[in-house]
Amino acid sequence: MSSISSQDKKVLLFSLIAGAGANGTLAGVTLEQVAFSFFPLIACGLAFYCMLSEYQNRALEGDIPLLTAASFLVGALGYSVFIRVSFPEIGSNFLPLMICMGIIFYMLHKTGLFNPDK
Image 1 (cartoon, one colour):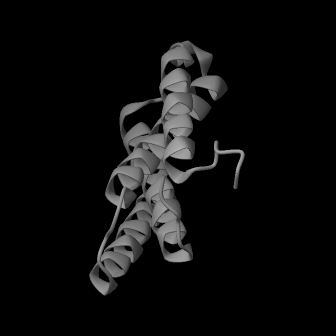
Image 2: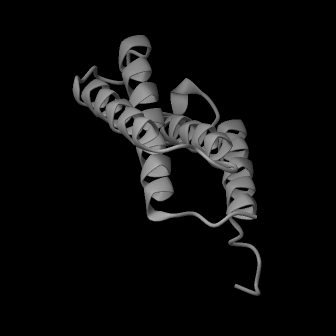
């Protein structure tokens, strides 16, 4: 269990935005139901740039690198679930939703939010 500072929360939020933006760009290029837009590409690039500047300013400690990767996956899988709900002919969203929920529960456990003593 680790305590999360406000700088770590920023990195996790940037990672979530980068995951959603990367999957939005990929979906816009590969799926004909989703219109291509430059906004997810710009959002992904800016989020990666902000994460890079945060990483260069201070050292990473504890579980933050693992939580950052998990947050990126939650963003990517969350956008995939949203697209599959909007366009059900693409396929089922059950597996991405269950994986996304599992990762979210893992992140909550690692940050100590499941502990009732706090």
